[in-house]
Image (tube, rainbow, N blue to C red; front, side, top):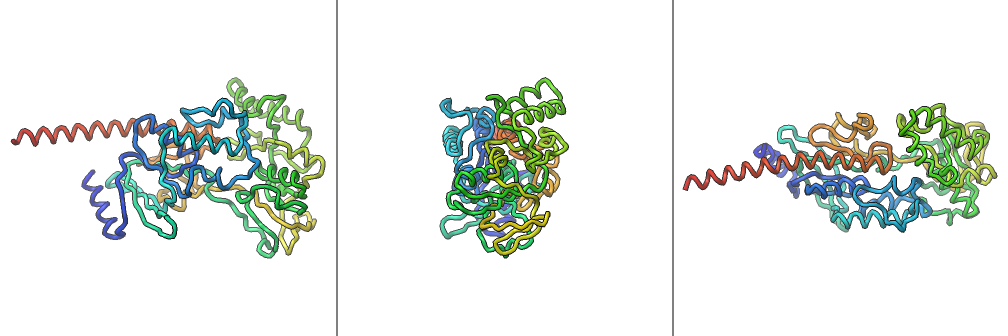
Length: 425
C-alpha cells in the first residue's frame, strides 16, 4: 500500500511539479458549521485533520452572504453544534452576529485552524493506493500556488448553499435597473422609496420583502409555486419544537394535519392572499423534497395589509418593467433574486457513486453520510444544523475507529521491524 502511494505521488510530482503533503487523518473541505462540527468531534477522538476553506474566514455564508436583520429561525437548542452549547445569556433566537460569535468561539475552543483561501479544484480517489488526492489553488494577495493533499479519508462539508442559483429569465439583461441575489442583500436602506421585485417566496424572499417594507420601499413578491407558511410560534411555543415533540408520539401524516390546523388558527386562510398551500403536508414535503416551510416573522401581516404585493410568475422583463404570466405589467426599479442556492460538489469531486448530479448524496437520510473509499458527507441532510451535527458525530466515530486501528497496526509493524534490526546485531 505504501509503495503504491509513493508511485502515485511520484507521478503527480513529475507531471505537475506542485507542492504536496501527506495528511495523517482526514481532509475536511469547508469551514462552515458542518466542517467545524466534524473537526470538533474528531478533535475529541484525538484524530488529526486538515480543514480547507476557499474564503478567508470560517462560516463565509453567514459572514458574507446574509442580511443584517437575520436571526436563527429555530430555537438555539436545535442549532447548537456538538460538544459546546450556546452561551446561556444568548436569546432563544440568536442574531446573525451572535451566531458568528458562537462559531468563532467554537473553532477557538476546539483549536480548529482552517487553511483559508484554498479553493479545491479537484478530489479523486486512487483505488490502487487507497488514498485521496485533493488539489487546491492557494491565493495569497496576487500570488496563486497549486497545492496537493494526500489523505485516507475525505469529508465533504461544502453544504447545500455553496453557490447561488440565478434563474435564466427572459429579458433580464435588458432590465436596466439593479439586479442582485439575496446573498448580496444587506438591508432595505438603499431601496427606500423604490418599487422592488422580490423573486422567490421562501424564508429569504419573505424576510427580504418584510425588510424592504420597514425601509419604506414597495416590494412585489413573486410566488411561482405553492408554499407552506407556518407561524414561527404557537402561543409562545416554537412551532418547530411542537412538531419535534409530536413526532415522538404521532405518525408524520397526523403531525402534518395538526400543524396545518394550528397554522389556520393562528394565521387564518392564507390562500386568499395568493399563497397556495401544497397538497403534501409541510413535514412530508421537507423530508421528501427538501423544501422548507416558511416560518412567518411578520411578512404575512404586511401581505394582508397590502404593503407586500403578491404576484404570479414572471413572463419576461423589459426596460424597468416586468410582465407577469397573467398579462399584468409592473414598473419596477430593482430586482432581488431570492432564488436559493445549490451544492457545487459535482464541479470538483471526481466520483459518481455516492453523490448524484445535483450535488447531494444519492442515499436518503439517514444513510447519506458515508460512501466508499473513505468518502463522507456532512450537512447535506436538508435538516439544518441539527442534521449536520448528527452527521458530524457519526463521521468522527467512524473515522476515529479506523484511524486508531490503522495507527495500532502501524505501531506493530514499526516495533516488529525494530526488533528484527536489533536481532541482526
